[in-house]
Image 1: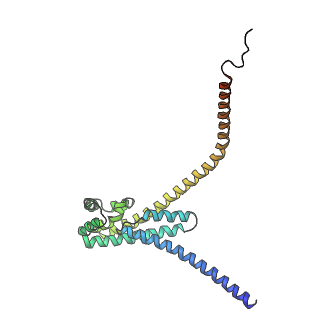
Image 2: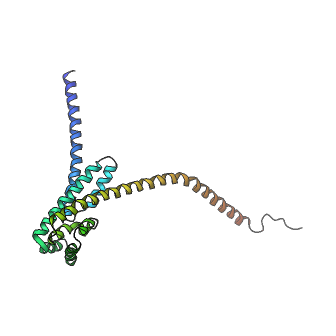
Image 3: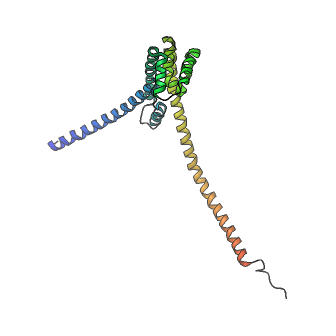
Length: 227
């Protein structure tokens, strides 16, 4: 191998290596973005976590991301974010919740009702509230302000986070499968409808042509005169 060929080989190998590294970094950057946005929302910052998760699941469906990794980082982000919210609520109490309501232009009465709701229903509200934006956003803070015991909070947060993130993956899969099925049906239906539409157009054209000929001939045309 000549020196120029060797340099070319090294250059091509380096380019391929760095391209692969860049692709891996981009994937991990996406996972990190999912983690941060879900964490922030569950800690009380209004960010579009559901939209980000659904987008990640769509990418996983096309093989661009790993589905298990998306579920893992999403669940971990929800757990850590909820824990941060719980600690903030435990320390700040209701005054913190009211300040958050003012900061994000939320209804203060709803925030107070959320705290009393957690006081009454506890872990069940924390679990099922994952699917309600207001509860998911400030539920952990409300649980901390309501002095929910930590073991109870941790149990319901772990199970609720995994169930919520996994359920969104199922929803995204079903939506993608439905869209794919509709697309296939439209493709098949298009081939079926083309000849039907063509026959219908010919029928309409011939009918209109027949009417036009009759109108030109007149009611008496074609009838011989009586002698």
